[in-house]
Amino acid sequence: MNSYPTEMLMQLAPVMFVSGLDLPPTSAAVPVAPSSASKDLSSPPTPPPKVQDPFTLLISRLREVLLSQSKSTVWSPERTKIFQVILVDKSVGFPPRKSVPPDDPSYANAHSPLSPLTPSSPVFPDGLIAPIWIKKHMTYLPSVFVLFLRMHEAPHTTARSPLGQPDSDLERERAEEERRRDIDLSAEIAQRKKSTGERGIKLTVVLIASRRMLDDPSLDGRLSFIRRQSSLDSRAALFVLSPVSPSELNDFVSSLQDALYESAIEYYTSHSKRVRRKRNRHSQTVSSYNPPPATSVGAVAPRPLRPEGWTVRYEYKMAAFAEFRGEVEVALKYAPSYLAGFSMMSPDITKMRIRPS
View 1 (cartoon, helix red, strand yellow):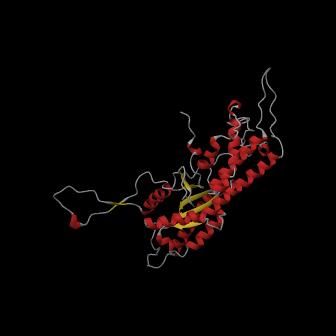
View 2: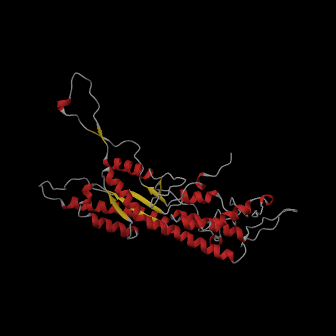
View 3: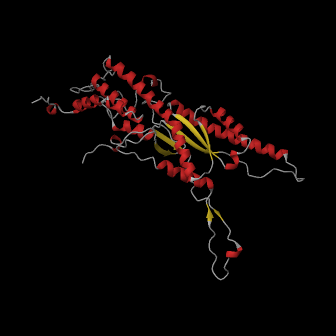
C-alpha cells in the first residue's frame, strides 16, 4: 500500500549533530577490593564490585539525555526551542552541494544533485521535488554541530626531585606535553570548523575535563590558546563539562540548546533568503535549462520544468525552512503553492472546477 515517506509526515525541528560521544568497546570499570572484615574463608571468593569510570558514565548519560530528544513527532504544539538531536561519528561528512566536485571547471555553473536541471536527478527534467530533499535536511544536514572532546590532563602527582623539592624539568615536560596535546586538539577542531563553516553551520566544542582541572590555574590560558588556534567563534563556541549529577547534566544540555537555538534559526533563515532570491529570479524569466537535441528519429526531447513549477518548488522549500524555525504561520502562507503543485501533478481528467450550487 502506498503511503507518504516518514520524513514527509514528521514535524520539523532544528537539527543538531552531536559527535564525540562514542562509548568505549569494553567497560573501563575499576575493581574495588573487599574489606578484610567481609572476607569469608569458608565460601568461594566473590568477584569485587566495579566502579565505572566517571567519564564513561558521563558520556553514557549524555547520550541518554540527548537521544531522548531524537525522535520527531507528527505534531507537538509545545515543541519550542528543542532540537532534533542526531549522534554522529566524528568523521561524518555532508551531502555535496553541487553535482560536480569543487575542483571541477564547471563547478560554478553546476546545479544541485537534486535539481530538475541535473540529468542524474530523480526529478529530471520536470519534477517538482523529491522526498530525499527534506530527508537531507532532517538527517544529513544540521543547523548546529556539537563536538565533544576529552581535554588532556597530566596525572595528579606533584613532580618533585629526590630531595623533595619541585622538579622544574618535570614541570616543564608536563607543560610541553599539554601544549602538544592542545595543538593536536586545536587541529581537529579547525578541520571540523572548516567543513561546517563552508556550509554555514554553527560549530560548538564541549571539552570534557575532571573537576580538578576546573580549578587548575592553567585552564583559562589553555582554553584561550585552543580558541585562537582553531578559530572558534567568541559566541557560544566553547564549553567545559566535568562529570556531574544527572540533574546538573540535564541543566547543562538545556542551557547548551538555549545558547545554540539562535544560531540554528539564523541557519534556516539564511537558507530561506537564498531560496527566495532564486524564486524571484525564476518568476521573472523562463527555465534556464536547454534540453539536448533528440538522439534518434522520433525521440522527444525532455521538457523542462515550467516557471510555475519552479515557484511551487521554491515555496515548498521556504515553507519547510519556516517550519524548521518554528514559524508555523509563515509556513502556512505557502499553502496555495502546495495546492498548485497538486493540481500540476493531477491528470487532466481529474481536474474539475467546483461551482457553488
